[in-house]
Image (cartoon, rainbow over all chains, first blue to last red; front, side, top):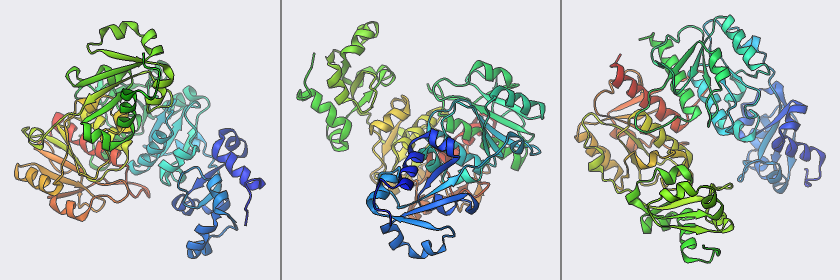
Length: 261
Length: 261
């Protein structure tokens, strides 16, 4: 059992939890909690750490774990954890490596594209609801918040493992590439001329969502063939990015189940 | 200018920021930031506090303020603020006093009912998107998180002032009362037999949303005449409460604009 935070492996976990750079360099991240560990694809798990108390109270579960795990004292686990009340289990996991080609290979695919989203919880919520709405992949601008931020991972509730995503270094080029493959790009825009319920989303479609405070840049808006607007009552100036993405993708899902109209 | 955190008025603001009890007893709360202060209904503002720096940099705005304001040193303001990077302005505001009678007085009203919601950000997001979707009022079970929690207030983005709401002490009785007034109650339920796009929401309708972790209690579900389900692809077990509420209310808004079907 590891009882010191000076242990090199413990230090490594703490680095992965707190530093995006460490995650990027190692191509690994930390998934914390019973659910995130148990849903992790077995072939991507590098190592598992359990607190002494967790291991004692969940011996049945621990015996089902396929990879060798390391027990750590509760105090050390508290240091490794990103949460105030740690469940007592975490795993170091290899990042998924999707290419844009894998993601847009679908016929009539449904996509969510985000530009410069900054709130980790918003991004995680978008990934979770995207899986539920049947989205085939998420494309992010390179300046979007790190998807492997512990808060984002937590709010995906496991969808992180199942929804393909990519940071597109050449964001504008990727959008043009999608257009050339026949994907209609719909910019969610406060000044959109078309109500979001009008277009036919049963064909290949992508919703393009902007930054929480500033919306989409003009450069990205101009690449999109369509600007759509969610009608808003009252004096609301804009919707939260995750809410806007949900309203749009569930309208697409509705059309895909029931037909347009 | 107030320069000591020992000042009685400063202490009062800190109490209102940190203690639900203090808010309840005084029927007052704190709204922080330029936007929340400038959108506050003038007749409900009790007092305004500005940091020295804010007042100096925004003298034009300060001269438009109708109520006498108090200047405090930047250090004292930092103590009064709920945020890490305070904007430098806050107001003490009288709570709105809505009755259930005011809220359900609409013809064909649209309502959101929440049972035991616990996340302040979720509640705030629900209030904001409810205004945008044209919701006439929000009814909350008494064990729902405090709507005047600073985090909730922040995430409403001003909708707190405009969407009527009530904590229904007799929650079950209030739901029965709504039914007797002709409001159809739709329980958002994972085991709902009806897809949420099927019912006609152009008549008086209320969506009933449960707790983040546990959903609706059986007692409340049983009061509702309808259980509706949001179809979910993939392996998602549930949607975030605010996302579910958004998908439902924007479907109702869509029907109310474009007709059912």
